[in-house]
Amino acid sequence: MLILIEIIFIILGIIGLVFITWWFHFRKHMLLSKRINDCDETLLSDSGLNIESVFQAPPGSMIHPYIIINEDTTTPSTITIPDKQS
Image (cartoon, rainbow, N blue to C red; front, side, top):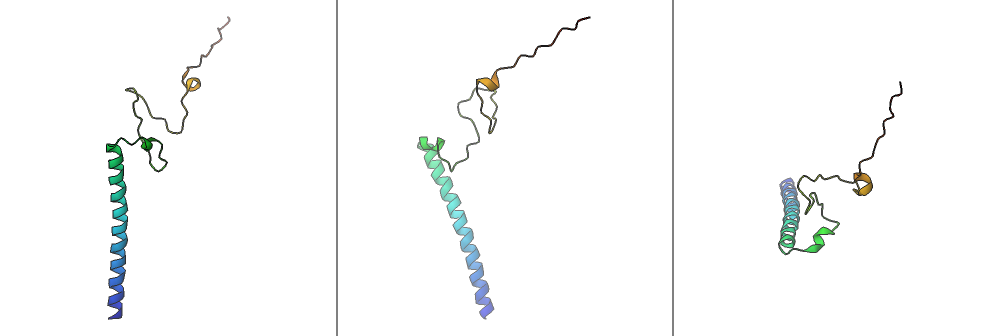
């Protein structure tokens, strides 16, 4: 009888942990949807969010993670080929 009560408590504990995990996941997505619908500008600077796409980029743009794109990295370098002297 004691073992049956222990198994019931273990099952209830596991169900409780699964419910708590689901609740926090559901709550986070609902808050994110609300912030997007409210056009919350702090979404762009919030460190807890992972932004995977570029907003307002021209068509054909590519995402380069962890690379700083500036004039020095986008200007094509010129290569001079010496003339063959016969």
